[in-house]
Length: 72
Image (tube, rainbow, N blue to C red; front, side, top):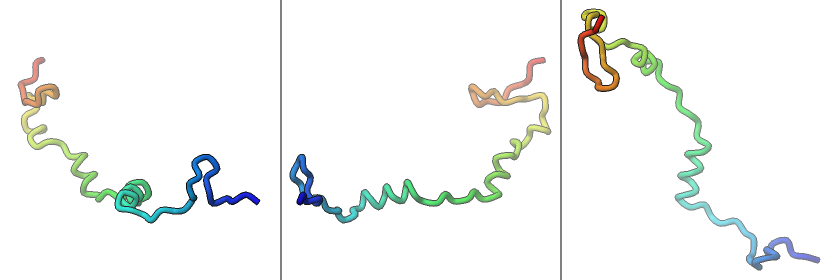
């Protein structure tokens, strides 16, 4: 009868190793439950910058991040 608790190729005994710190860290990263976003976070993402309605002749240059006068 063949033993099933020994690797036939390497001869190593098959047994479970105790969990280490790296295992626990990765387990939490993979199987954790995602936290729900707070409603206020979504509200902030939808808000327009202050002054957008006040100075309609100016716009934000997205490539430089600077405010500049609109060209008609």
